[in-house]
Amino acid sequence: MTVPKVDTTLDAAIKDQQTVSAEGERVGDSISGLIVNSPAIHPDHRGRLFEVFTGSTDFWSDPVVYCYCFTIRALQIKGWGLHLHKNDRYTIIHGEMIVVLYDARSDSPTYRMTQQVTMSADGVRQLLIPAGVWHADVNISDEEIEIINFPTAVYDHEDPDRYMLPWDSDEIPFDLTSVFPVQTRQRSAPPES
Image 1 (cartoon, one colour):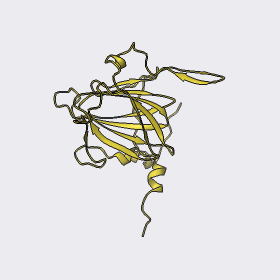
Image 2 (cartoon, one colour; image 1 turned 120 degrees about the vertical axis):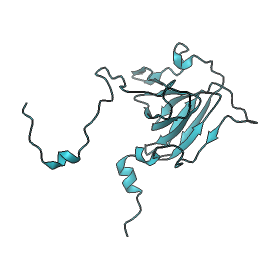
Image 3 (tube, helix red, strand yellow; image 1 turned 90 degrees about the horizontal axis):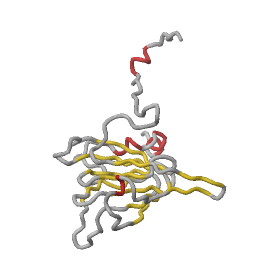
Image 4 (tube, one colour; image 1 turned 180 degrees about the horizontal axis):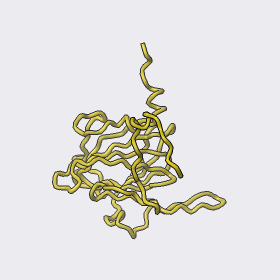
């Protein structure tokens, strides 16, 4: 194929970078200790089934000791949150979200790295977030989403292992509004005067 001559618009363009291999595996660095899991979906004429807890993977190497379900309303942000004594193990049940992560562990090989993981019912369904990693959950869909969390420690009501920052905190070098679809950002933009 002959490469076409293109005008100066190409000078302003950003060339796409490889994000997955030909086999569909993620390419690039990942936050140390982060585990992404896509359980097989088994559809038939009655519906669909996927296994949440298999007990046989690194994702479930710590025992299941606690479980809860939470939702995030359409186009809302939940976070930033961090734990020091437990890992979060998310399983998305319904909807689509982007989890933005920031490694705050000063002894980690991926210290200060940010990463985004898109979770949905049709792709990545499970995510293990290590202790010491800030995370924000962004619902990028037009409907409420449902997530089950299996943290590796029981919630301590008297002394919660939960630290929070505002979603727009300058402490974390990431603009969470950048993950919303462009159409959504345009819809919510203030009117021009």
